[in-house]
Image (cartoon, rainbow, N blue to C red; front, side, top):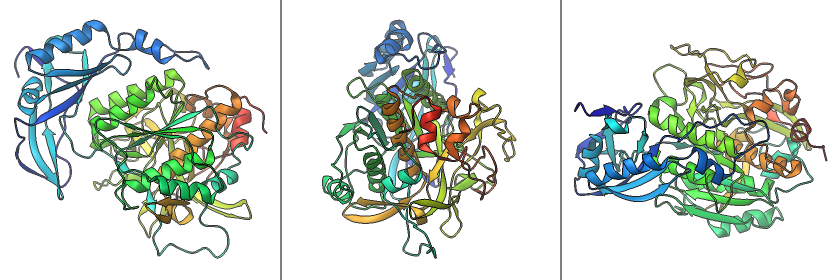
Length: 518
C-alpha cells in the first residue's frame, strides 16, 4: 500500500459461501457507492423523554462541511461524480466507472455468481487517502452480494395439529391475546417498514383488510437506490415478507400511516433504506420494523458500525426500531459448530424480537413456549453477540457469556418475544393466496404496532425501549416464557437468550411506561 494511503478499518471481507468467481468486473460498467462520513460532534446523552429534531440532529451532529468538501475533492481526482449529499444521514452518493471506483479505493472487484445469480464481489480490504483517515467511516456498494435473509416461514401442509386450542390467528387476535391497549388505533403515528425486495398487490390488501372489516391503511412506497414495489407472484418469495409486515402492522394499528422503503438486498441498499427512514423529513417516521438480517460473521465491521450509528440516530430522535432476531436457532444457520446471533438485531440500540409458540382457546393463552420446531428446522434466534459488548442496561439481566468458542461477554439477544411459530402463525393474504406465516419476521411488526399504540396512548414517543424494559419492576409488563430452548440456550425465569423478557402484556406495559390502562 502506498505510504499516503491507509486501510479503512473494518473493510475486510471474504467470498460468500457457495460463490464462484468468473473474473474481473467490467471496468466500463457504471456503478454507485455510498460513502459514510463521521459525525461533526458526538451525540449527547439526552435525558429521558428529550429528543432531537431531525433538523437539529443534522445541523449539530451530521456530517461537517469540511469533511464533505474533502470527499468531493477526492471524488473529483478519481473521475467520480457526487450525485447526492445528505448531512443528517452523513452519506454521500458517488457514481463512476468500475475502473475509477476500484482505483479510488484500491478495491479488488470481481464478477461472481451464487447459484444462478450474478453479483459484483469484493474481497480483502480497501484503502483511502491518509488525509481522509477518520473522515470516511464506511464505503458501501462495491459489493452487490445478497446481505440479509427475510425471517418469515410459511406454514407447511404437514403442520402439526393440536388436539385442542387455536393454532393460527389473525394479527388482531394475537394482539388481543397479548392484551394490547384497546382504546387506540395508532392514529397520528407513522410506521416505517424496511423491505429488501418483493412487493404487495392492492388487491391482496383489499381482500385481507375487508375480511377483518377494516379499511386499507394509508400506505406509501418509497424507492431507495432503485428499489420498488415489485411483487413476484410467489408468496414464498420476499412478497411473503412484505405482505406479513404490512398486514400485521396495518390490522393491529389501523389508524397509523405505513411507509414501506423498498431497496435491493445489498449492504448498501439495506443501510441506505434504514438511514432514509430514520431521517425522513417528509414522512416523519415514529417506529421502524425490520424483519431482515444475517449472522454476525457475514457482516463487515464497517457495516455493523454504520448501521449501529444509524440506530443511535434513531434513539436520539425518539424513533423505536424493532428487529427480528432470526429463525435458525442459536447457530443462526452457520455450520461451524459455534453459536451466533443475527444482525442488525444484535445492535445494542434496537429492540430485538424473538419467537414463541402460542396456543390459545376461547381468547385465553393455554401455553406459550420457545419456538423451536425440529421437524421444519425453524427456531427463534437468540444468544450473545460476538461483536457488541454487554450494554449498560443489561448488566443486571443475567446475560451469560457466549457459549461459543470465544465466550465473549456480549449483548444478549433478544430483548422481547412474541408468537413466531408457523404452526401457530398469522393468517395473511399474499399474491392472491390465504396462507399462514410465522417466523420472527412477524414479531418485529407485532412490536412495532404495539409501539405505535403506546405512543398514541401516552401522547409522546416511547423511543428506545430497552433501558425502560430492563429497569426494575418493568418485568410485570411481560409474560415470562420459561420452557423450551433454541439449541444452545434454554428459557428460564427472567431474561433468557431465547425470548428475552417474554411476550408482551400490552396494558401492563402502558401503565409501566406512564399511561393509564384503558
